[in-house]
Image 1 (tube, rainbow, N blue to C red):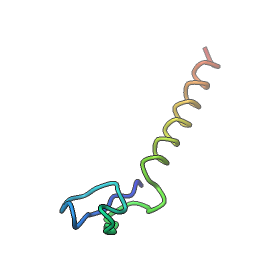
Image 2: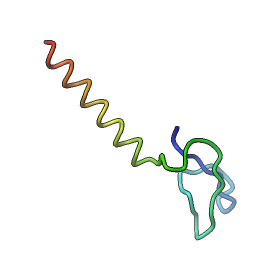
Image 3: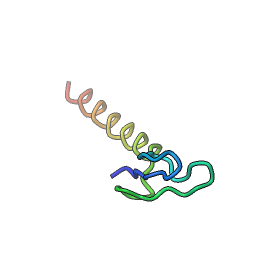
Length: 57
């Protein structure tokens, strides 16, 4: 789901869409799903699970 790019500058995969002003090529994932989106969703899901578990005990 998270976007991964190939950087011709670094000659390897990266999470960054641009390296040293050069655009990287999307290898997999969705371009709008960066690390910040993944972290946000993980926090929301983790919080929801914690609230659920707290409420049943």
